[in-house]
Length: 211
Image (cartoon, rainbow, N blue to C red):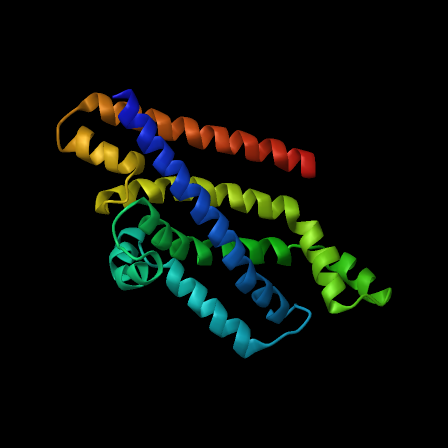
């Protein structure tokens, strides 16, 4: 039981880590575009903002379990297969990109307008304002968003186990549910709870340090 649980835990950490990395990197791009083209942004553009905002909202509205099935062809294209721990990273990332993009956009747009106006009065360029004001002031808030993302991906990774993604979710389904081994369900639940608590504690500590 110990070896099986350790292996499943490693698979879950693997899925959560890489899907977090990819979604944060890829989600940062639409977040910047949304921030810059918003009505109160540095480069307002209603068409670009509303189009991108619509796409983000559309992809956010898909239940993850449905998204898993819909993007199977894309998963095969990217990962070379549709089943397995590595393949599960693709739908996890796709589902997380619009989520973190919206969180990053909200964090960036909460920057004090007075600080932005002060930077403009000193002759700062849009690029300087973006990196030295928007992003610098938003780092603690964006960190909170990443913590929320990780916690959400832990739950999504458990669902990925229902379609052969491996990890704690797969273990709970195969041993706990299908074989009626309650102890596996209990241990899997405890592991996920402990992991989420540790991530949240780390996030709170880093937030205080950065603030």
